[in-house]
Length: 582
Ligand code: ASP
Image (cartoon, rainbow, N blue to C red; front, top):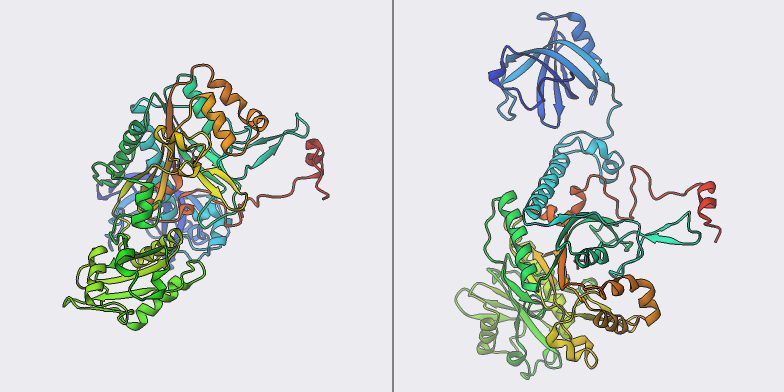
């Protein structure tokens, strides 16, 4: 037996007991005649004392050979500490060691195994197994396990069946590139790794399984943007005989349960907002509604008054930033610089200070009087003491720019409180999205999403205006899940492929199996998928998903610990009949 207790367990109650502990050496303090060692495992730290007077001298000699991260097993007696440490749960006792066995030695670790480590990112990833010994990383992984357990329990209780779907499949188009795997047995042919189990879960509905879920790895070969992983985990779900409302209610239930169970955060019904409204009021399809600063459109109030910068524009729009009317020239200049950054790309910013005494002062006083400015303030819901920030230009672009500014102001004012949770549904997404590069429509969600019946008549004439039965769940400004009600008849599905520019033959080749299935009594169905990594990070009050993944890839998609991807040897290449001499 390696241990009778773990290192976080012993208290004053255990004094006089003989115990056996195992773990890693966190710290050695050598006082000559006595040596103290902090012994660590997942559960905590217990202090060991090696004392030549109270036990064997050779023990002290032996303890002197210990280095950081050695793995040892000790036997000894629990005694009350003289100098108590009330910071840790085991701080009232220590173990007077009577025997010790070194189970394994350790090289000096390349960074300190402390909550605040001296190791940089790359080094920590290379020695991730050491990084995982650190409290914050381990706690994140334990937290993730807690969340996935809660998800499984909740969904099983609701009658969802956990089904595994294959990883070696044929490509599913979800907008990204596929990772492919060459098939040795089928020369010149490739599997694709799933971007999601989309078509399989739909086939499970055709199979009558009624309610499906899976916590599943998905693979997308995208150019890595910050905090994206080429492989990531979804909570993937599908239900039969449902309308949008049923799906929203079912999964609002899941997230409400998680917030309550994991965070003790109670939330009633989630607000619902159409895509159009989200874009108009927040300039964003994943608005952070923990704070206000809603957009106010000022066209009718601000145009035609001789201010050329506004007059010719499609949209003049502003926000009221709470309590910032006393911003200095320098602070305002910083905001102007912010919107002019190439990533934002605005030409400038008009400001209005709504002073505490009710008077207004602006950067455009030459063109607008107090009455004008007052009417703007009203429109953006400003209170005295607020700062109005106004932008103008082409509508879609200006909304995106003002949205970035709104988020920047929220950061500056600390309005993004990680302990607060503000979920909502964004519904009625457009079915299609025009791609300027390829001059084609793309499915905004994916090609299996059903158009809204009331918009069907626009499909041929104005496809860009057709709305879909598609929805996203948004939490604190992040899209944490998304899905749709699906097409379930062959004719509509085939029409959809036409619209997306597939030839009949391409559609048949890629999705024949799905359209065939639709001919054998496919039930109406719909579902969604949550991004588990991000959901866990947000529930954990953090933004980076990497910190919640045991073995993440770096920004170039590499695993620096195992050094992947890597070349394969000639023999493997030959077997796969792959030639690399390009
Ligand atoms: N397969 C979709 C996705 O990965 C989710 C869904 O429509 O259920 O985004």
